[in-house]
Length: 227
Image (cartoon, rainbow, N blue to C red; front, side, top):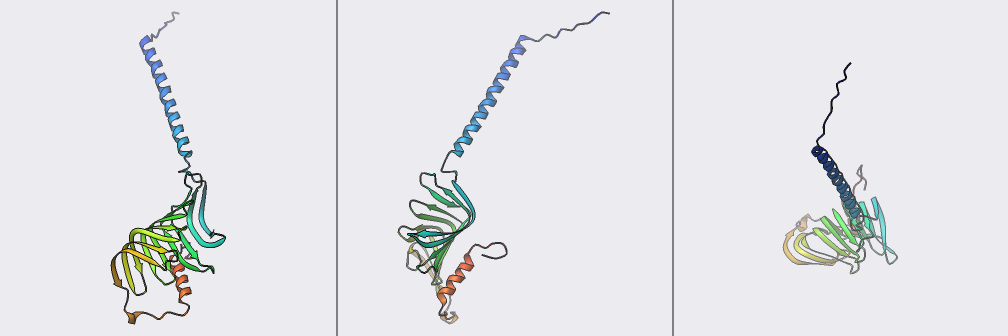
């Protein structure tokens, strides 16, 4: 029986092309892997972007000179202690109560987001910033700075103030921490709140009632309507 043999001839040119393509593909995938790895290492080694501590659903007390001065409530608290200028970030909003010497709340501040610069002792609140004091005065702005070293609160943005008898609007203001002594840099309007006949007489314990009412009105709400 005769055996038929077939010989398959591979051109040297095709072999060279195949070898070159294989080398190029190897170099390409190797370079891509190295590039991706470097980007990951670079991003995770930047202390400005990586928090040293994350906390959620936080309620804590802050002391100043050994005296409890503030209560902070926040859904998310990120600490960047390894940054060149350490700071705290509250990306999902913050609610701060300030206590007087008798541990009574004499003012509160809240905003959609906040940054606290640790060395400067400076707060920066942005978005729907709301404040209130014991005189039942409420303050609204979009940008607020709170300097704890100087014990003052200020802003260069538009400010809307609701007093018992009138509404004041302006651009920029500076105030003490309890929000009882403040100056509006540029007043743009003053409007009556209500007539004297419509005002209700205040009770003897109005300061405590105002404080509790403001805290309940603006404090972060949990599920079920509990603050």
